[in-house]
Image (tube, rainbow, N blue to C red; front, side):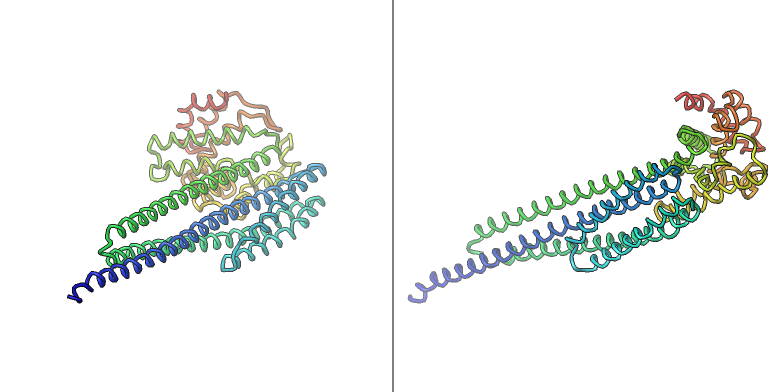
Length: 448
């Protein structure tokens, strides 16, 4: 009888003990999950901030190098002084960004990459005054060498360490996500254990655990949504930076074209001609294995760079109103090979490889001729890359209808006649025919 009386009490004690153990387990689990979740959110915010900072720092360095390159091209002291002030402002922004990053970067492998980036940037700026002094002294060739070799090496090292830091951050974010998922798995297991411990108080435990799990899932979903939103912002920011990079490249091309009196219209028109002709080639199935939508996009993007090598041609040759001497023409012809070197040295570690190859082929081959009488290598027929053949038609046509220091513009009718007559000698005959077939579209570009 006493034993029977003690059974409810023992059951009560068992239920009480199970309830206490369950409550303790739930409390510990909730505390750990909240702490892990807070750490996960903090880590995501820090890493995304670091990624934004690194992307911004990289683009500030490219902008600074572009200012230095423009400084070498300037003729007047006033223009040089203005660019030096802009460079000083960028220097302050870059060092400010470095200082800001150094405050919050933790003492881990990421900090090692940061110090490497800091060291390369300091060494880069030590050479800036040297380039400015050489530029002011008229040592353009040496200054260009410093820009394309010494300073580009520093920027490449900076980008390499930034990429390494970004890779480390990405791994850190993946590891944090893995730990978060593991913690959620542990939470689910703990939930089952807690429910088993409080069978008698199952309803209470189920309400508590289900409610907590639901909150955890919601919190996880909210974190994933927030991370996805911030990643979209990062992608948008990167696209904006790529567009800025393209604008800098086109701006450099326009600056070079302006040296021989062009106001930028040549770049715009030839790029449009190239795109129209490439689309025509694609629709006709000519070199269908090469001319894809991606190829056309890269070709159009690379077209403005076709005469970038003219930066190496002296003004007295580039702007000469009369016929060039043999020596002067030999100097002018070197702009193709010089341009190819510039493409590889300056853009080689920035842009994707396929774009670099197309740009290099356009720069070096757009003065080759179908009959082999062109330069610099005297390539003949299909030895000339397709992209260079397309560029040649667009470049010559626009040169014919444009005013130059050595000639007046031709009428459009005359220019089309010359293109048609030069098919098979100067130009790929099929491309010349396609160009003539698109006369209405070409004339609409001229009128814009």
